[in-house]
Length: 435
Ligand SMILES: [Zn+2]
Ligand SMILES: [Zn+2]
Image (cartoon, rainbow, N blue to C red; front, side, top):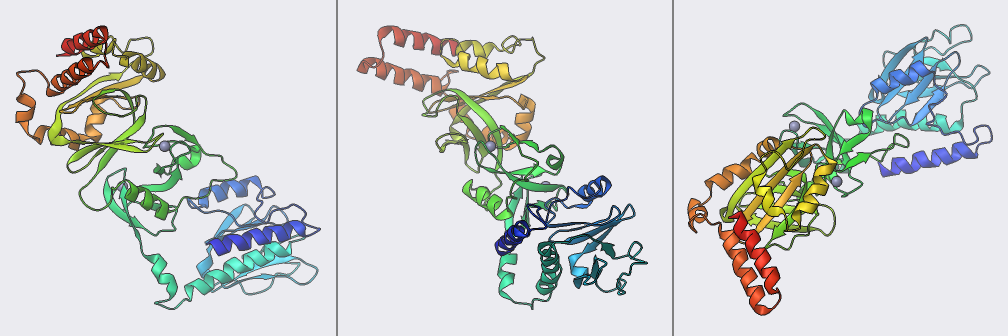
């Protein structure tokens, strides 16, 4: 693949250096008729790019990719698979043409009288040597690959990568150099994209091809890809590496939901306002910081004493704090309310999630998913929370262990002099108000 790219680049340089074809790229499709370009856009596969564009006379044209040759003439398109072609032939006489050769194709050379009606040839004008060479390379190169004997060194690279389809959570596989995959479980076509914000490799639905806009599943931020030049395709191997880095392959199923923002915590050293994702792993809920210093916080399910979500969708003008958000009142004075207000002003969906464990508390905001949706995606979190040891949750005569712990820590800080009397009193009142 890389050697091919070098050859294509070399061919382009050659095309540029030729006097007649100055600065004209051999893959420049701007001289094709508009109808041909429109039809090409329909026919090109997800990751297929035009490598050779040859405009012909009378509104005809030829386009070649690494898998097809398209011939447009008289308002109709013929598509040939490279595997079905033997060669491309070019005229040497006064009448200039290019013709495709292969089983079942018209083998007669075009003449002045029939070139307009020849089924597998078009008339050309001042065709560059670079375009000829590249078209020939594509047609012949494919034949060579097809003829490779079984057990050749190429076979090692055909080993498929193990993947997790994050649309349907099925285990799937795809060739390492492919730019996407068709999920055998949910039937959808996806490609990969690298997030410009958190640099993660995400799984994108096919529809993104038309809009060039997508929201990263890990950090929740929007990406806008440039239409031209098209971004370099991200390979399945890179996506598989991303999933391995996140320890999502092998072992028990891991479901995750990204785009949470931490807006407060006690007892944990996670940075406030950090963007993170939540991973439901086998024994722990993992909070992974997506933007900023890479960090993970593991909360064992059997240490989680409280798991709450509140919020929903709000029309503009209505108050997020208004609708029965009693628990949020306790945030005032804790410095969390300010950040939460900021976060909730940006979005109409506002979900607040509170996780209290025996070591501390963490408060998260989600601006795209309602509490119901969060619970559906992270259903295994609620199932494991419900299934974990109930006795832990029932100790303390109604007072959450975390609050007691925090109070104990505060008292220690107060004793050591780190907290003033006023500060301790304020924090204590704040905690007691929440119990
Ligand atoms: Zn799927
Ligand atoms: Zn991202």
